[in-house]
Image (tube, rainbow, N blue to C red; front, side):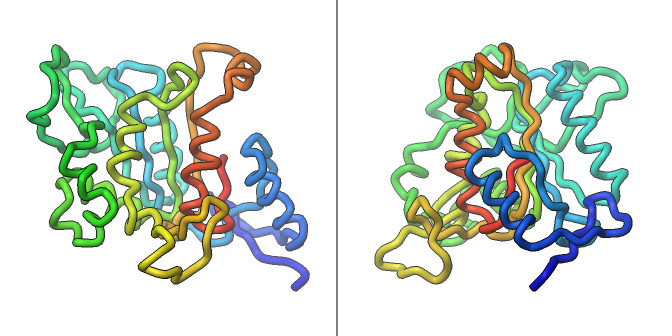
Length: 256
């Protein structure tokens, strides 16, 4: 009752954190993810980390950040699944830069013609997906689009989720928002109260979280404005992760 053991993500000798201090830091992070004094992970290395990168250009600073994050995680001994929401042409990837594995998705017949030479995870929620939104995942992975089923399996596998993206117009890029729309489904990320009953804890949002395997969320993002301007504009990407996604994860999940 006096303390809990925690191990640094990179290994080494763990240091005890008094339980009241650990709980207080997690609570402060839940109130505002700006609070970053957090207890180390409670499990030993290696951890299962899902890294999702969103940027249309392989030559971007964002892509270099994703490469650096993935390299550091692997060197620390973690198991990493690195996904990109865009499929880069080989000739557009700078020499020496590594990119993650794209989710393969076929062009939607409803999509307008595009002049882009790249494809990737389609962010568009189809009419069929929206029509069966509340029950499609309950019927099994075989009824999901292949890229959605693959992304769902990734989320269920991960202990930690890291998002690397540029902040555009004070929020997620549309492709990343579309990934959330299509993948964070009922019976995957949450269960609605009602006829199915409640089988576990209910989050402050009123939803029963189902991705309780995810214990930490890391964000690496770039801004085109100062932190003060972004905060004054609402910092919607941070708010969506902290207030929208985190309640679907473990009750002690922190955002870093």
